Amino acid sequence: MDKETSVGAFRAVMVLALICSVLVAGAAVGLRPRQEANRKLDRKKNILRAAGLYQGKGDVEELFQQVETKVIRLADGSFVPPEQIDPAEFDQLGSLQSKETSRKLSKEEDTAGLNRQEKYSLVYLVKKDGQLDKVILPIRGKGLWSTLYGYLALSADLSTIIGITFYEHGETPGLGGEIENPDWQAGWQGKQLYDSNAPNGQPAIQIVKSQGKGPHQVDGVSGATLTMKGVNNLMHFWFGEHGFGPFLERFRGVSKK
Ligand SMILES: Cc1cc2nc3c(=O)[nH]c(=O)nc-3n(C[C@H](O)[C@H](O)[C@H](O)COP(=O)(O)O)c2cc1C
Image (cartoon, rainbow, N blue to C red; front, side, top):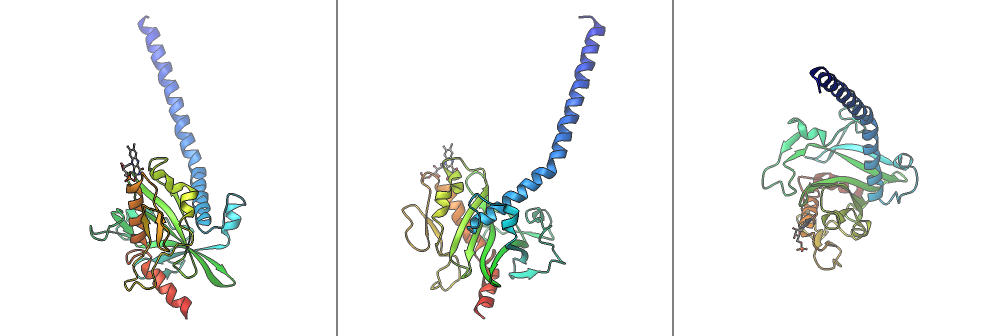
């Protein structure tokens, strides 16, 4: 090949590469809003599923209208006015990036392997005849390979579990990945998160290896002991004093009045 031909071929390849990269970058940018919308819709679907309000049929946006989204301050469980933090705009996981809106957890505190914890959290309420009927709370924590993200729904007594969902994780399919399996998730229904006789207010729920028949026991997945340990740890973290403990305590006080 003479010199002129090879320079021409090189130019053609460069132009083609440039056109392709512009097309790929354009598609990535152009599709981002749609991906974001799908991500939000998937979160809503999981919130509804945890609360037993979605079984794969129906318009998610329409069903979600019965859910009231609020922001709370985790330290004392108080509601944050929407003028201060708009629940529709609040990026809870994004708030972990700022020292103002999150804090580093000490080794003793960090039982769910989070490293940092946000100061504010979204909570989802479902009311019936003006009374609280269900609360759905976001949960997350380290499994074996990855951070597990999900929701736990409680009934109005703030202890009886309605359901659990996990919408994102990187555990092994068939092993830790079974946290996504609706059959395993169904084993949580009706279990008691707290033991009203326990003096310390700590969660009593436990994932056990054998068949979990007790009111606080949930069946583990065999061959996935480490993921199960992660789920157990995250439940104890989020429903203890550093998680939703103060919020549930405050809410319990209000609903008893
Ligand atoms: C390729 C591979 C993937 C694994 N994935 C998981 C997993 O996602 N979750 C988990 O707990 N254990 C997983 N394990 C198994 C753990 O290494 C460990 O053996 C297991 O948690 C012990 O559970 P058992 O006591 O119920 O047998 C995996 C093992 C291998 C070889």
